[in-house]
Image 1 (cartoon, rainbow, N blue to C red):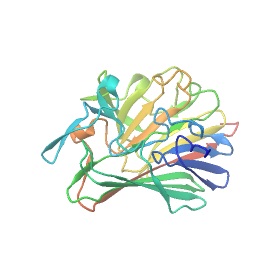
Image 2: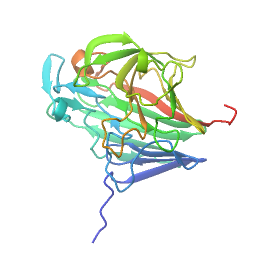
Image 3: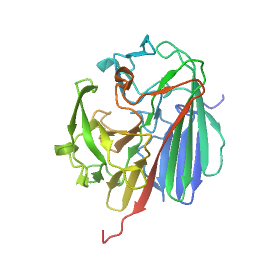
Length: 310
């Protein structure tokens, strides 16, 4: 009898120096990223199905859409409620679709998928993601292109869980560039109100995660001279930085407290987003792509060893 394929489909490994990454066919996601044999991501085994959105691209919208409803170009649309407990549509439409590997080299690969018209999203979108390992770390470029004859709404994000040590995230320190928090309701949907970061949400200087519980969207990201915003997470031996270019003006931080008991607080989800939650309803930072038009946003991860004197 023919052996069953892994739950996440075909596996594509790339490498550069002491770095290794595995990209999967189902969802086009990042299953693992290792540096020097250490799992920088809290991913999942080859014999497991992806849970908690681990490493998944979030296309054509990130995070939640209240009631799965939105209007675009004068038309109303209703999506399936993929988070039924909160009556939301969540994390787009490509997490479980089969992607194709193209341009596979030793240190890079591109995955591609076409999202064909369907109820709630009657548009034709080509999505591609280039994963590349360089001397500077991992680089991920997400592109959406309109293949149809009418404009379409587009947003994107990705959902990696970051680790710096064995044994969970409580002892790690994290620094975030976000100056503003979006307030959310019980369904984790923004209310329309914003507030300067304060209390447990003020991570503009390195703070120990401890027992703080985070599941919040942020914006107003402070950027360095190179135009990149950076979330920096430090442990005993290493410092991991998640950077995002100007295509990602929004950020989600999630400590994983609502995951299955054996998966909670193992990694910090640092989610770059091109638009905030519920953007298809509010229109905020949604990219209306005309026929043939494309949009690309890029993020990545760097890993540094921490010297004992630090």
